[in-house]
Image 1 (cartoon, rainbow, N blue to C red):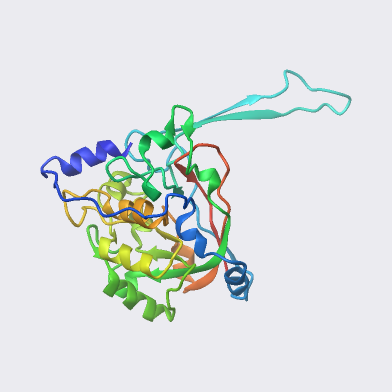
Image 2: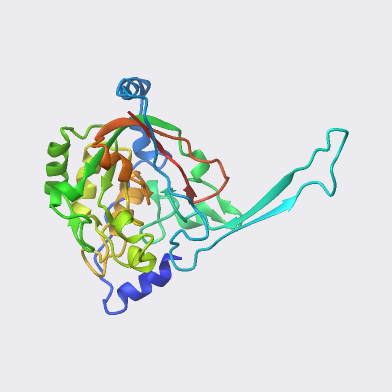
Length: 305
C-alpha cells in the first residue's frame, strides 16, 4: 500500500500539529461535486464531437503495471467445462481475478482518504468501513459521467517534457495552460493534466515513476474546486506533486479533493494521444465498474472529439 512509500517520504520529517481544514457541512451529501453535472452539460459536451475520434484514457492493468508498494495483480484462467458439451462441442473458460483495484488507471472514491479518521461529509471511519467493504461511498455509487473534458498540457505551459519530478503547478500555471489551450475551466468539467511523466518513466523506471512525480499543488487544487470541476486527473500515479509541497503534509491534495471538496481523482490517465493531437476539449465519458464496497477502482475513461 502507499503506507510503505509514505514511511520513506516522511522518515526525516516531524509531523505537524496544524489543524485539519474544515469538512463540508452537509452530512447528507453523498456525491460531492458530481452534483454539478446535468443533462444540459451533457448535451453541450456531446456537441464537441466533430471527428468521432475515440481515445481510451486507461492503461492496461496487468503484471507489468507499476503498482504502489504492497499492491499486486494476479489472474487465473481455468476451463469451465471438463470436456466438450453437446452436439456442438461447446467449450469455455472462466477466470478469477485476484488484485488490488488501485493498480493502473483508477478513480479514487471518498472513502479512500480521510482527515484524522473523518471522510467527506464528516463521516467517521467507524461509519464507513466493514471487513467486507465500505458501507457508504463505495465506488459502485459514483454516478456515470458524460461531460466536458479539458486537457491542459503542462509540458508546454512549463516548457519541459516531461515536467520535472517535484514540480508543483498551482493556479498561475493552470491558468497559463488553460489560456494556451483556449479554454475556460467551468462548472461540471473534468480537468486532465498532461505532464509527459507516464511516457517518460512508467516503462523505463517504474520505481522512479512512483517515488517522485510532478503534479498538482494544494493552492491549485483548491482553486479548481472553486471552479466547480467534478474530477481531476493526470498522467501520473498520484495526480499531486511528490515530494510534497510540505514534507509533513503527505497527500494533502488527496485530502483537499476527496475529503473537503468531494472531487474524485483520476490517476494514471493516458493523456499522450490527446496531447499529440492537440485535443484540448472533448466529450469525457466514464462509467465506473460496480464492484460493491470498494474505495477505489480500475477504470478506462474515454475521450471523444
